[in-house]
Image 1 (cartoon, helix red, strand yellow):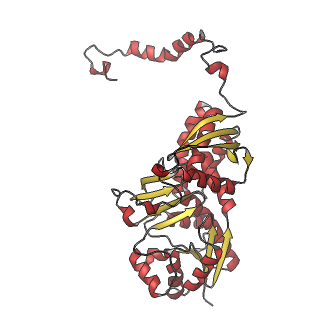
Image 2 (cartoon, rainbow, N blue to C red):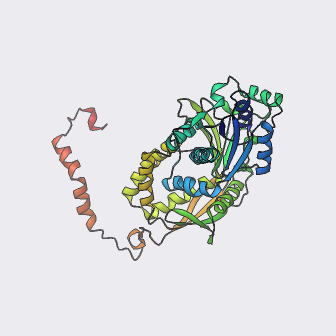
Image 3 (cartoon, one colour):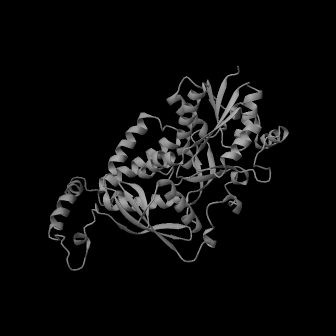
Length: 407
């Protein structure tokens, strides 16, 4: 009896070719596992493709709600964007996929798991480290790290072995997508000077071609979590799907970035994240009402750290658990509604309200009803400026000292 191996199967070029390679070159009995986190392919299509490529069995796991509730939304609460741009869609799906790989491997009695990641991508790290954290006894096999084939060679291999794929030399993009976002790389995109061709985008209209009239949407939050659209309570998956459609129609969510990969190289990536961008803008706007200055300052720093942890494949780490605990605590009073204006590629908060708001109109207004004690300002400024005055008196620079004018 050949050993069983569970392959994370997306139905794309890399994993389709990997099935045949694992079977013929390594002698494995391949169980293809598809974890549906919001794919554009049907279960029947992927099962047919996996079996045609040589898998003995195809397992389909519908994980859309789990993905949004337990992976995407926690990153939303953190305000996480890698290097200020990337909403981490692909990175967030990998620990979930790894967890399902381990679970199916246990059910099937498999001794190993496999994935279709390349030897210079981020996903190999995310999947390998996640499996190591959850099941260190399982062997991890990565065919694309072992064979010497470029993308054109893979396409030729698939054609030679009659493996059904949906990639051609004329359209060689590598695409990954889930409910939280869509990423595109390779092909002409590898030249950062080249403007992305129009066929790169699938979820978003060009801002120039988006409707001239803006759209408004009111997003309701409860303890930081999105729970309603325009006053209608809605489940997380439906909420994200609806925002992807609405915001995408108005050109919101396009990201063209050069980012620093974990393995040490720079990579040009194209992302589409209409719902993710819209929700991040809305969530931050609500936090501006409900968090103190100190909470916002520290949380902004931790958002960068959280994004690094997710991007670097450390979801199942104690560090992530500790960060998540603080972030969850900050969301106790992040409840309210934000009105977002979607127009020509931008999503902006134009209204926000909360029963837990720290905004006090009587203190903020300059009109009648102003309750701010202006007489207290003089004493406050005196105390606040005391250390500055003391230092200036004790360490006054000489008149000809350049530091006097250039601190």
